[in-house]
Image (cartoon, rainbow, N blue to C red; front, side, top):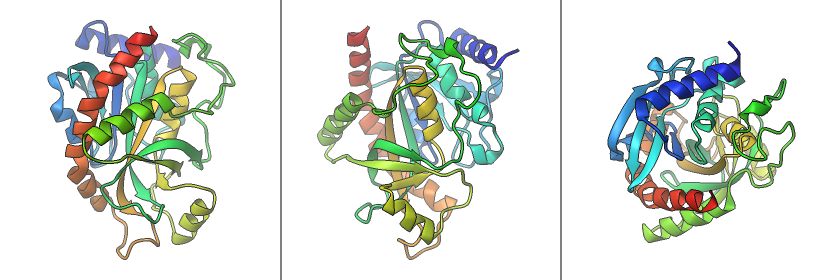
Length: 287
């Protein structure tokens, strides 16, 4: 069975569990942010372990299940946890869930993550919109033969495609407006992805600052690339869970990442509840 066939089989299984049509909006929750799924109304929960060919989360803070229902009155599909390259998964496995989202007809995906703050004015617990990314993972998930059948939307599935607006500007504007209504300002930043799992050295952080990064993490970029290959709009949202190496007086730890993530879950949930219906309305207006 080809990779493409595996994606189609997994999507068909999920469709049978959720009913049709599937939600047009999806959210991927990063480390420590999984409780956002508790706000979903009338949830249908499908563990990753039940989905054919779906990779299994092994990292603390990633529950490993799909929650489908409604958020803010809009149909939504939430991936409660992701898998990473450092867990031993291949690039194709890392991006398999996003491929399945494309096969389900998802038109927009919100990719959240826990990130180290590089910008000197960031603080733990801050939410930051992604305006761009820098890929220092050493690989691209599209390496190899191009599978044009993943172009589920018009003009998608190309071998070479534009990444000028990897993170949708219209979705960023919707997110900023929703944040203001929730009483806070969403700044924009540039996310730099490393393969992990070790945290960065202070020397590396200084180098990342020099090339324009304001956030650093170990995910999101492969998912963004694959989503854009399929024509899915992407909104990237980082939770600054700690200051990066050399900028904090305390050693970095995954426990700190999860603890800060849990503290910001309420704010993230309120933002997504307000934002989701607006993204849904935008998708419908474009159909």
